[in-house]
Image (cartoon, rainbow, N blue to C red; front, side, top):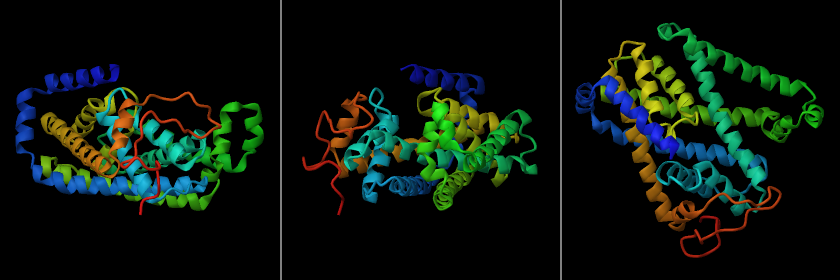
Length: 333
C-alpha cells in the first residue's frame, strides 16, 4: 500500500510540475498505432526471458517443459502488477517452480536470482558502454560515473570469484555461501555466454520498442541515446521505491530525455507510452494464463508466503490451480 501511495504521489508531482496542458497536447499527438508492434515485440522478449530462465534452471537439474516457464513468467507479470496484496510475481514463480519440479525452494530461488541477475548485468554493461560514447555527453557525470563503477565492479567481482578460493572463504564468511551455491552459473563460461546471449536478444527487443516509441511520441533523440535512456530507467525503476516502478520510471524518462533537449511534456508522454505498453502486455499475459491454467490467477490472489523449510519441496496449495483439477504442472503437450 505504501508503494502504491508513493507511485500516486510521484505521478501527481510530475503532472503538477509539467503542466496538464503540456502533457495532454503531447499525448494527443502520440501515434497509438505503434502500440500493437510494441506489444508484440515485448511479448516476444518475455518468451525469450522464459527460455533463458528454463536454460538456467536446467543447469540445476530442473526439467520442466518450456510451456511451464512461459506460463509462470506470464503469471509473475500479472501477479506483480494486477494482484496487489498477493505474493509478488517473483515469489509466485519461485513457489510454483519448486512445487511443480519437486525440488527445494532454495534451488528455485537460485534459478530466479540467476535469471534476474544476468538481465540486470546486461542492462548495466549496455548502459556503461553507451554512456562512454559522445552522444551521451550531455548526461551528467553524476549519472554516468556510478554506472561505470558498478559495471567495472561486476567484472572484477566475477574474475575474482574465478581465481579466489571462494569455497574456503565461505566457511568463514557466511554471506559468500550464496556465491558458492551459484557457482554452476558464474563458474561455467558456456552458461555465462549463452545466458548473456539470450539477455542480449531480450534487451535488443526492448531497444527496438523504445525506437518505435520515439516515432510514436515525436521524441527527437539519437538512437543510442534511447538505448542509454532505456537501460538507465530500467535499472532505476527496479529499485523497491514505488509500486511496479510507476512514477519513478516516468520521472526518469522525462529527466533523462530532458538532458538531450526533449520538452518535458513529450518526455513524460514517452514514459506514459511505455506504461501503456506494460499494462497492455500484462493484460495479454493474464488472458493467456486464464486460458491455459485458469486456477493459477485465483491461487496467486489468495496465497500468502508459506513458512515451509527450504530443504523440503513446496507442496501445500490453498486451492487447486490446475485448469481441470489434474496434476499441477503436468507437462504440456
